[in-house]
Image (tube, rainbow, N blue to C red; front, side):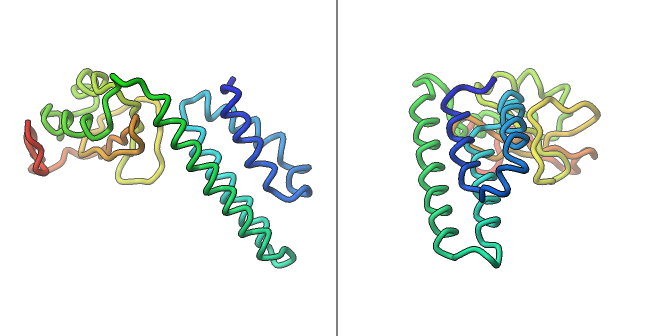
Length: 182
């Protein structure tokens, strides 16, 4: 079950949809959000997605532009609040995504399989999402199969995306790369 703050934010986002849409899809959307949050998807990501959908629904030809603008302003405010809460709730000793990226580049796991890299990746002290074969879809569970680590990018101060490919990268540099000081 998601924490009350996340559930409240999802509820606010769902209230931005037209009542016709909420009557038909609202309960299912709330349940889906709860399941995604339990699986580790950040609440602000779900809220942003729902608010974007609400703006599209409000911009339907029969809707007024003012309503859509109001929804977008609410969305921007909620996302800003959520980012502030996430930043404020991170413990002072938690590593930032930047230091995790530096440590990953210096660890020598680039070009290695997930199996070999996993012990090092678990020590990063950040949440890890997996991006396979350059796709935009992220998965929070550890991938199975012969995937190779090709890079990393920051998702938030406490989360990184580890980029994978199914083929061993040719000439993948390990150690110090991208101007990182190891």
